[in-house]
Length: 436
Ligand SMILES: NC(=O)c1ccc[n+]([C@@H]2O[C@H](COP(=O)([O-])OP(=O)(O)OC[C@H]3O[C@@H](n4cnc5c(N)ncnc54)[C@H](O)[C@@H]3O)[C@@H](O)[C@H]2O)c1
Image (cartoon, rainbow, N blue to C red; front, side):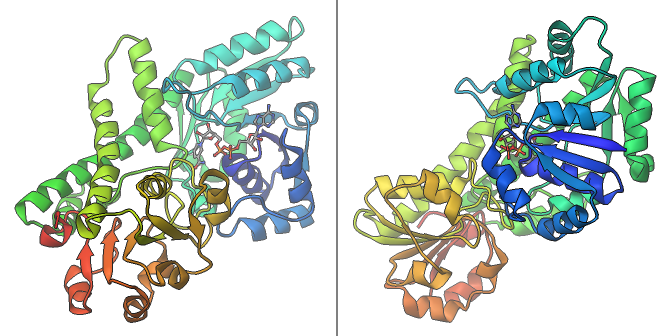
């Protein structure tokens, strides 16, 4: 089937590639010409494990192409996916201007029946707004359907997630659109759920908000562990073995970040309030999340006493491992706060440094994990990359001016770290988690 994707970012590029891999004829377009130039030259503008090989394979097979205009996308695909960004506005509401711009452009090029799919994450009732916008700007009688097909992939394992989804949600309200969507997702037929458009939109916001809630919940429990002397990793294990609860998203740390959870929780709170419901629960989820970073900074201060003038090595800048995405990463805020407090920050990330350089001035970017800790008074761990778990901590200790580790991701065993001679603080693990 011919498929077009508008917006070739983290979601659009993976989506187009996966459709090609499933045997469809995919065209991905983007208004950012540099991105398309790079892709056409065989360079992948994002880091996502396994994606480069899959793109190369499908381009070679002639199943994946790139383009620059919505006109091309409309001409090519029977089904046209909107995968543009919906970043947060200062109010917490998502900025839907790219969705609006794309809808109007789609309307201009609507010459035969098309299924227009919202894959971008949008508030409930956006599908109706997209439908009205297209109808308003299209020629009278133009035929189209709007469908909601939210994306659940996780950066860092996006290819695997997209090739093996837990579920495919299709919110559609005409048989014609439903049939095309089912054909497109044929390999996942037994995992596809059909809903109305509004319910599909809500499934996405409710799912991400629930996962964020789980993270804030375990972080709140971690704080009780620190105050009581319990160990949050043991508590989480005991909770997670209950099949009604599940073990995922019960890792205490410095809070969630990324381009989805913070913005989606904000957007869900915002749309709920516009609809007349105050989602107190989610506002508390956000508050706990922010608090978690402040607690981490306080742990660093408690160990260093005065931060000004000290060298702090920071491991991890991306919001989670296996991605170069630093959007809303707690690490970025932590680096900025330490810099503002007068620390000499030396940060290292295996993939996220280039993007971090664009938003973080006044800190050093080290070439390696070891370089970041050379002569450091403290090591702050913000992202749980495997490379850090495997680091030779004896060498790290020898390189540091003072062997103090503040671990925001609980990647080492407190007893072993103390045995090696580190002053070690982590999150929610009794004395090792608590304030000095
Ligand atoms: N990143 C994720 O893990 C993830 C997961 C699920 C859902 N989502 C949702 O998917 C959407 C896209 O997220 P992303 O992370 O891929 O964003 P992104 O910023 O990486 O990509 C968006 C792309 O859209 C392009 N674009 C913007 N306006 C355009 C226009 N008028 N015409 C053509 N292209 C245009 C941009 O140049 C950019 O390349 C968002 O709504 C996000 O919430 C993201």
